[in-house]
Amino acid sequence: GKHWTVNEVRALIHIWSDKNIQQQLEGTVRNKRIFEQVASRLQKFGIDRDWKQCRTKYKNLKHEYKSVKSAQDSGSTSKSMKFFNELDAILGHCTIEQASKSDN
Image 1 (tube, rainbow, N blue to C red):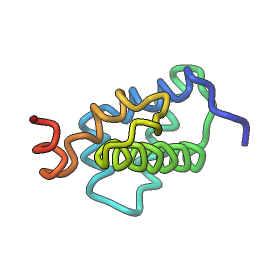
Image 2 (image 1 turned 90 degrees about the vertical axis):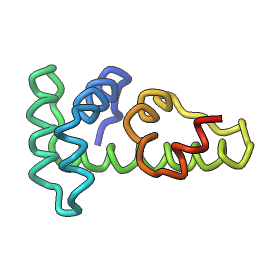
Image 3 (image 1 turned 45 degrees about the vertical axis):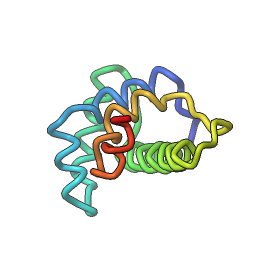
Image 4 (image 1 turned 60 degrees about the vertical axis):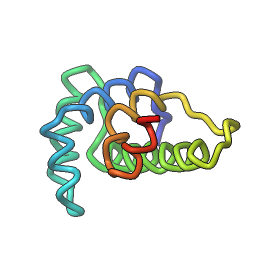
């Protein structure tokens, strides 16, 4: 498929940051219906992506975020990614372990 533009990724993250969407995503593996919702919300922004593209991008972003996060946790600063702060706002709350790390 064609590359996601910065604006498209921003829009995807914006939708993903919706608490309702997050709760649905956290609670399920079979998430086609959720990504169909995400895709239709993207269309309101004039972004034409199908649910599979949305799910793939979501998975890739999540994977990239986790690898940057664990690199940072082990003291490496060489790894970074474009939307890290936005994703950290969404995903940073996932585990208690991460939460206690960010306190100090």
